[in-house]
Length: 279
Image (cartoon, rainbow, N blue to C red; front, top):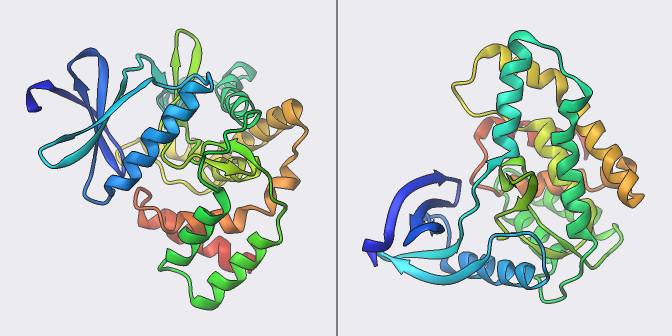
């Protein structure tokens, strides 16, 4: 099977992406921290989203390369919103001011999520059970803190809408001017507020990749709350769900993220400080 493996295209916390067969396909190869069941779940979720007519990479097959589980999908040519944000931050921090037109990259995420949330796929895994599993697995929290976080989660209303589970700007690619949402490993049936909370927590507490100029990091810090406000207002305009309805989800979602391998220690400490202040 190795003859089908091409150039490495990218890497995330759980997998590496390579060209596959030709320029129209890629393969996502699991890292050692990702079990075969996780990639199989992502393949199943991607199939369900594709059959529903959502704009996602077409899933082709599960396979194995040198003992590593792999998922073959359509290759999407386009830049991610993360790439757009980094380029924008570098331009704005260097020689120009942020303008209203720059907010469009933020609104794209709100529009993409509102479309996903308008769908229902009952076969998707239940969101709340996955959240509880992550919270209980988070080694940073005491048993009492975990119990109190889960109690907060249990008090929240239960919904049954399609949710993506990881709506970060790196998972939205712009192809021919239209967004394509990738990485459906954490998709579920549940509350849209959880997706919104994931995005808000990421913007508010994330640590940018190392190596960026200091003025870029400083600029991002200055616009974190602006990004959250534009995102929340656009989503509310489309769906009626306001920030205040998402706010009560932030503690459980921050606790869930403590169990994620792909974020750095500094970010986890920020999340832990927020959780303990709220509890």
